[in-house]
Amino acid sequence: MGKDVIIACDFASAKATYTFLDNFTDTKPFVKIGMELFYAEGPEIVKNIKARGHKIFLDLKLHDIPNTVKKSMAVLSQFDIDMINIHAAGTKPMMEAALEGLIRRDGTRPILIAVTQLTSTDEETMRKDLLIDKSIDEVVIHYALNAKRSGLDGVVCSPLEAEKVHNLCGKEFLTVTPGIRFADSEAGDQKRIMTPTEAKKIGSDYIVVGRPITAAKDPVSVYNRCVAEFVD
Ligand code: C5P
Image (cartoon, rainbow, N blue to C red; front, side, top):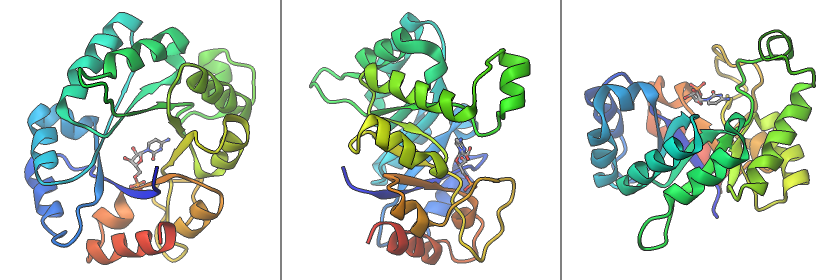
């Protein structure tokens, strides 16, 4: 499984997304479609971006009873997506059901990864709202191990956690890491950040980069810089 840079296409409409993707004439980057765009435009956006030749990570973070997740995954895997995710908090039976639902008739399936603990949740919120009395690290590792034992391919995590996840779950267990910034660029609302070079060093398998590319004057050159630092 090759390392790659995934662009978070956090746009509100199909039009804005296509205008952005039109910048890329020589390469067809791996793109992430999130809830906002999918809910606004429906399955058509996935089909159209696929038809343009991009790999797609459908970031819908499913979390429901196992039967509902399994049936929803069976629908979503028909869109010819390459990667999709669920919440590890849905527990092992839900993760196993998701995996089962994803398998297509021809035996293929997209990569399935789990969200461990959202980076917007800190230890205090876990304690107060979720009544979880453990450290974030312990929870992330426990959820990652649950995901691995359920047969998933990897997790979304902070680049700061990727090394630990690999040490415990194995090198082949994928770490997909957002929170990427260049040393000389704005961090925005991301707090726990790393450069593409650092993410490569600690062994991330995929980096997810949004605003540093989508808000750039020259998105293609910023994307190329990410690839040069992270992949090449
Ligand atoms: O613009 P930026 O590079 O911060 O975008 C990062 C992308 O990764 C966004 O789509 C964000 O929702 C997503 N993400 C994240 N942190 C997580 C999970 C997903 O930033 N823990």
